Image (cartoon, rainbow, N blue to C red; front, side):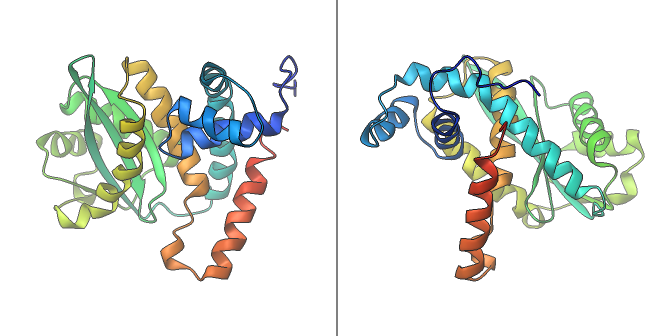
Length: 232
């Protein structure tokens, strides 16, 4: 594979660190610049922007490929679907998101409308990659009922507010990240960032409240080690 860092003077380790800090944590470009400056790394915030635009999709694709391979033999038991409102230049867009029963973000999809056609496109896109789950949980949005009927999943559809808390909680990291970025300027940039953020979040989401401290430290070290080998 061609070395993606070939024409960059900065070491790959610094580039990976800058991209991880910007995408994973609710930091602005200037905050990442200041934190790296404290570590003796003198770069501009525009350099951080260029790095995440260039390498973010590359890192995310590699993470998705590895995780897709590990999920091939796992049964898709239950999905949780929901959509969030995102304002872009004063216009409302909808970010459709799907997570599995363990909180793994499966798919993110941006549309201008929240109707049946948008729901069908979103469901087909997710099922094309991960197959059909045994159960899909949503809120009471009528578009979901119409979409489930069209694709033949009506019997597997369950609605309810509290039973969909899994995905309601999964919106929080993205919302914090959105505020740090001072919103988005186009639907394309929202789609790009949502996909990258989902992959990075999945990679570092260790559910520390469910495991012991020693296991958490082990999993965290493994995740960091894997990140440092991306595009190596």
